[in-house]
Length: 213
Image (cartoon, rainbow, N blue to C red; front, side, top):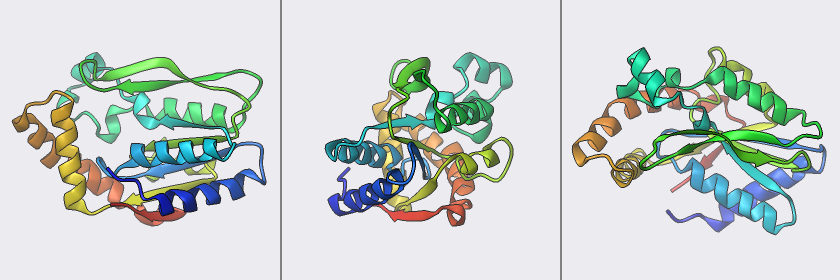
């Protein structure tokens, strides 16, 4: 996926303007599955660090429920849906990141491929990092506990991408992570598309819509 340099430069300047007014900035990046959130946030953090501003990306995906818990709840076949995440845990993490003390905050990460599960306390966020970028699907959903997220962020951006491009990327990612073509297609056309429809309805709540390709 090609990262438009002009887009990243514009977003970097927007974050730098926010960072000039407060000790820590939290920016949320929302988008449908396969929209390119991870690519955008990684490029933005790199651009900020190149400008001499520390930045850490904290993905919401670290709050996937464990596979064993999804099996117990009967939700394993739609992993990625809003009720397959620990939303309250994510909100609690954002609160700690919003008002850092003198301690490092450790966030969970999601490991794709063979593991396909979350790994706790794997991502350190030092207290002196001025910019935290968090990305995920449900940051703008107006239902508990997700409705508490926007108030904990300085801005929330929506990544807008052509739906056919997004679906192709998503299918290819499923295959690359070990799913058979049949199972990859079933997820892309099934639960992923249902989730995308929910996320798409939150677009108008974003502070900024970022066109992506």
